[in-house]
Length: 254
Image 1 (tube, rainbow, N blue to C red):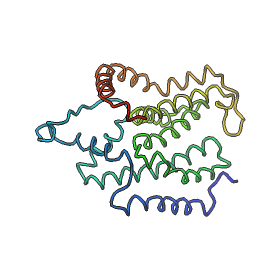
Image 2 (tube, rainbow, N blue to C red):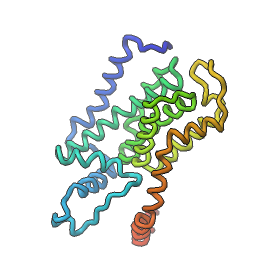
Image 3 (cartoon, rainbow, N blue to C red):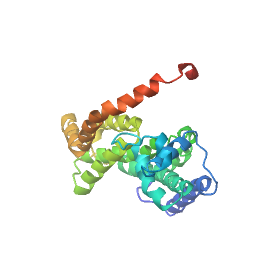
Image 4 (cartoon, rainbow, N blue to C red):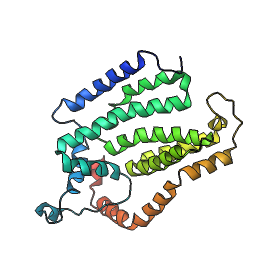
């Protein structure tokens, strides 16, 4: 396969993108098991403290995982209705997954980048049907983060790549815990693999694991700051989680 897009690649991508948007744009409510819970939480963040309904809720912003969905929904809910805001977020997820897969393949295997179009087959999987939207939002971010990690380990230190790496790190952290582990483990594996520091043609010199890990630490330094913030918030978040576990009917788990 050629490295340059052929004449049918872009139209095919557009057709598949539009086809994946149909279930979101042309139904009254997108089904998803956890969607009502996420939408309710995002809506509560927009209510003023004087609202009578806030008597039954305690809303507090945390710089912690799962907050990305609320941060994106917050301005949208002030501009559009609930269903319209949800459609916008879900549409972005549907488009972002194939786009990030395309970027991922263009970095890791540009000669066979057309395989990225297979990602359209994995958009509406069980995590989408279960309404795990914070996790879904982080999937394209993880793919972009791994692609940026490879560019950095190849020595491509530019202002754009460094800024993009920092931004992706923050967004992955805010999306979901699983995405944090996925990006961290994936980046470390890339640093250990001998091919992780070579370019796609294999012409440059081998980069040692220590140097590659150093480049990753420099590029993703934002994660260190976020980890400190998360640890500082553990007393509050831990108390809330502990209360929820204490009040849970464990028999329902079986």
